[in-house]
Image 1 (cartoon, rainbow, N blue to C red):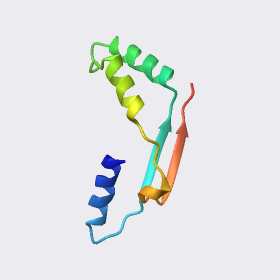
Image 2: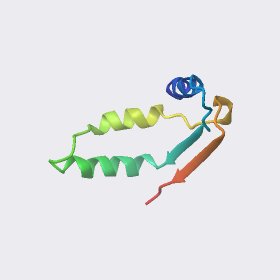
Image 3: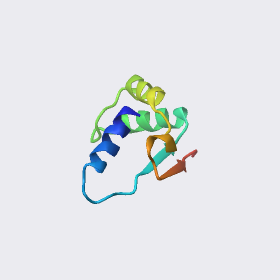
Image 4: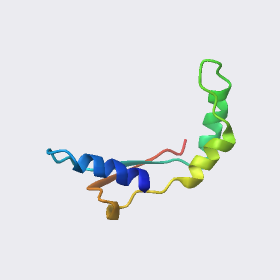
Length: 79
């Protein structure tokens, strides 16, 4: 929420008012881990330690309308 608040505050500083739409990718952790492991096998991709990705995943907070969003789009990704 702190990062999103900074983004919303930055938008509010402009004279033109922007619609605040949050996109949330609802992907299970095991799929995220699988994708990172696959990407890490490609020498042309940046390496991301799985434990770092898991740490990021555990800290994600779903957006809420209380944060000032005018719309929240949830993208389900359960491949």
